[in-house]
Length: 390
Ligand SMILES: *Cc1c(COP(=O)(O)O)cnc(C)c1O
Image (cartoon, rainbow, N blue to C red; front, side, top):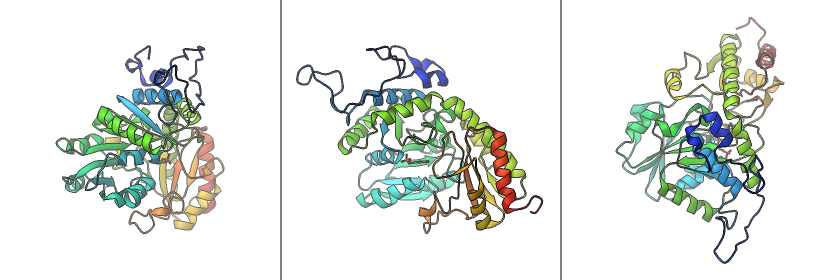
């Protein structure tokens, strides 16, 4: 890097860090280095790149950009968020214990419970917003504590600094899955986390056109272990995927501001609607995590969940009758999405005790104009419960 972009504000880092003009051509945008291998001047004499499973210049740019955005010493990019999660499990050995939040992303739970546990690693679940419960659940052999905040789909808030403080004299590392907040709204390393993980598929990519993951941290020996295992096991992102993610993060700040503003408007509208039961949005003053969210987040992001008064059928009808909000899993793109967690994103947790209410609907509020979003939700809710009938 020719310039220390770490001195610059977030918005400036997002556009410039790791993304100096191309030294060969002057191209303003980092090229897609669509190559698997690199010519060597002599055996073992090269420019730092030998083979693209190990390293690729477009991926290096993404690493530098993401390290700068999360305030970490290094970042590592992966083929998906779950590839990033799996790579972190290589920090564990048989006999170790993982403490996982009881409403962790379903894929994270599935990986730890069904895959990692087969290799002699124990795990348990705890409500991470209950600090006494967390204190009681930490074991001498705990090596990873896995926090997600806000959570999915109830948007619970976990106090990152408070959990980090519980681990001060304990060898366990605190991992924060920062996917729902994004690097712009929440900076877990500054709050005491050891590692930050994202599914870059969501807000960082931001356009629903790429699947990816990233881990950011500070400890050099952790980077060495993760790089060794990533190179040994192979779940790397392709150069075009890295390039799409880099393009996405350039506009992260402005997108997150609009996502948050639209979500707040939508949450306030839903709260007043007769057809709606409870609204889950950390930006509402009545939300139990509102004060913590205000402290540790810059804004409250774009995810809103709510229950529909008519129960399961009404929730299914609402999810099926919006036009601007498209019926789909995933989140964090510029377009608004709606889904029924019980039947869609959370169908796989049936029977685990982590089931969600069947009257629940989840929104990923996009960056369309708020008037179109409100009109769309109004017509969908009125179709199931005529206005004025509670
Ligand atoms: C989507 C998601 C993941 C998994 O990421 P993939 O890119 O789908 O593998 C992990 N955590 C959270 C919070 C997610 O939303």
